[in-house]
Amino acid sequence: MPQQKPQITRYAIFTVAEATPNEYGDLIVSDTAGKEHKVGIKRAQLFDTFQVGAEVKVGYAVYKEREYIAIAEPTGTHISMVEKEPRQASPTPSRGRDEDRTDRRNALITTKDLWLGGKIKDDNPLVTWLLAELLIIATGEKKTKVIEAKPTVIQTKEPEPKIKTAGEVLKWITSKDPSIKAPRTWLSENFAVDPKAILTQEKVQELYKAVKAGMNW
Image 1 (cartoon, rainbow, N blue to C red):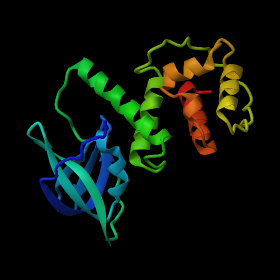
Image 2: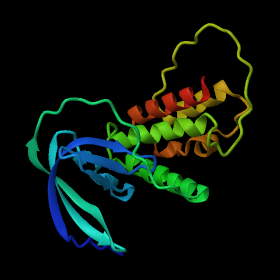
Image 3: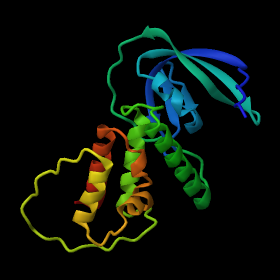
Image 4: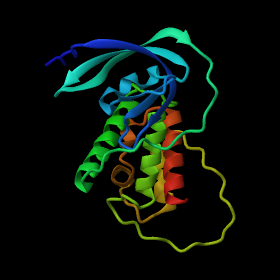
């Protein structure tokens, strides 16, 4: 069934001063007038429109009596902006632990699907957030599976392997930890990634670096 187009109730034009993902994967956009706008994770395909210095025309729709940004497009006007230090994620209302965990998981899955499907670019701030969240999972803060810690052994630095395919990533994982008998399942459980979906060499390298950093290999 085709998705119904949102009914636009009003339009607005503003210039982007800053755009930063919050802890739930939404994009928080500040304009040059100091006003904040939230673009929900469900509209992640719009995130690339909100480049710093770009003038953007947005259309608002209403869902359950709440107004949200449903469409966005650049006007073609762009001003030079002074680079700022990235600010911390915007504070969010207090929520229950189960609700918070569910929202984070849904945001991770949605972002991963959009990224692997080519709908958001590698330099999108949401991709940076996704990789950071995967590292948190890998280092144990939110892991679904306990991985036995290994004693630290002082040894000479190994040369970087030349990994170009997802299959080589799987072989590398089993070479680092022979106890991992099903590396594909291990990747899915610990990094929320399906190797079959990693099609480009660039994404293979990003996956390799995320696993290496997460496992301290």
